[in-house]
Image 1 (cartoon, helix red, strand yellow):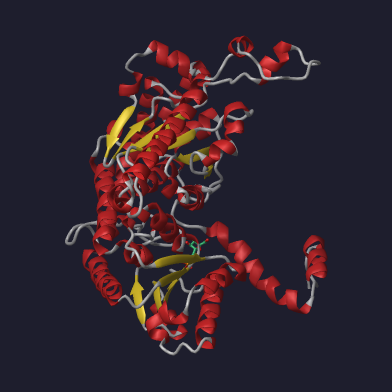
Image 2: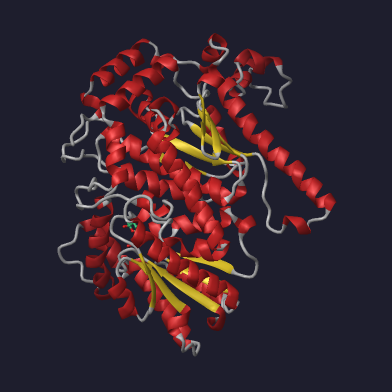
Amino acid sequence: MSFPRCDQTVAWQALSGHFQAHGHKLDLRTLFADDPDRVARLSLDAPEMVADLSRGHWDVATRQHLLGLAAECGIEARRDAMLRGDAINQTEGRAVLHTALRAPRGQGPQSELVHGVLDRMFAFVDATLASGRFTDVVNIGIGGSDLGPQMVVPALDAFCAPGLNFHFVSNVDGQDLAAVLQKVKPATTLFIVASKTFTTQETMANAQAAKQWFLDAGGTDLATHFVATTTNVEAAAEFGVTTTFGFWDWVGGRYSLWSSIGLPIALALGSANFRALLDGAYAMDQHFAQAPLADNLPIQLGLLDVWYRNFKGYSSRCISPYHHGLRRLPAYLQQLVMESNGKCVDEAGEPLPYGTSEVVWGEPGTNGQHAFYQMLHQGTDTIPVEFILVKQPSYRNADALSPALKGLLAEQHRMLLANGLAQAQALMWGKSTAEAAGESAPTASKAMAPEAIARHRTFPGNRPSLTLLLDEVTPRSLGALIALHEHRTFVSGALWGINSFDQWGVELGKAMCKELLPRLGSGDVSGLDPATAAMIGRLA
Ligand code: F6P
């Protein structure tokens, strides 16, 4: 199956023309003034959420051109190829089937394998929770074997069973592990060694150190206290683990939280809630597979990403979840988007003449407002902001709160929402110099002319954002939200004509590290470049 790259299409030429004629000068304030139905026209319903894309730097004509681009690039056929399990990850000769992990039993490819592991995992989770033998779970893994569970467990804190504490150790810096080991006891701790390959340096080093700590403390029942989640069952057995939950090479690391890599999530939430997470993702999969292009949220977002990156020249996007539980979502999305689409050659290995992955970054609101929002409002770059607003708050043990405290927290939730709404509004409307000049200014230096002060207090406005609105962060809605981002990443990657499912870019540094490691002991700098040699001279 072969489809043109985005820049080889007629639609791309049409988009370029549209950009030159109108697209470069879209102003949100004019767009809203000219189209009273803009919000309705550019809002979409998708499973578990509503998306308001009306504050984006696009209009109906842009969207039509982008839909033409999607059609010409064969996005539906590419999507279907992924969903049915074609080996679309060609550089590794693999299928890409994370969607199979959340399909109900008997549906989708590989169902028997998937549900076989899920059944074992759920039996383990149920028995472990019923036994009450553990107080702490330590997940040792990095990248895709860490970020998913590390993001989801706090996001769903309100759904977590009490009595079990979760710790995530990822960094090869021993400070990460040592801090956790201070807090846990060998007799009541379950270690999960999570690694697709079971060869990752950081994870293997941390797992060995944790094992040493366990044995030093007189721990004897290693098989009960260490389990593994991996595709490399043999290596796990060699490490001394007898309980292993497998997955398969057709699950990419950054797409693996739905597999046994999600074991910490299942332990935190219980099996039924883990199933609900999968169901939410499955609902989004169905939407992605079936909704017409114009109503398909992952497709719309992937198209918007291409428009922003390649025409509007926006090289980053800020994730701003107004929900404290989602505080690790930006970090999770960094790996998902940047490891998937940070590529400079197309599927055929040809250098790309346009930009690919944008930089993804962010912090939860309202914290971000007191850090980088200054730049978002008045900086020289335009950075699209993605607000996630949640109608209902969720707190652990909410029933135990006094009515008075509930009232205060409800007011705090309104503050949170008002802040999110206000930021989107301020980014769009801005404030003119005339408006700023009309305000009573705070005391400023007498040497400064009032007009100059007003210019400092001017907001250019016309800064784009989008808003995803969820009723509540539940296992189901979070599953849908994550799957939305997975598919959106696939869409922009497919339009760019890249393989979003390999990650060769992480290999060079790993190989060089292997070569340098013994030199830090020996001090041998022969054959090294001068900068590395000089630094080793200082360190060794
Ligand atoms: O960072 C590179 C990477 O290969 C990621 O793709 C992966 O999620 C991570 O390392 C961890 O790999 P593993 O699960 O094999 O330990």
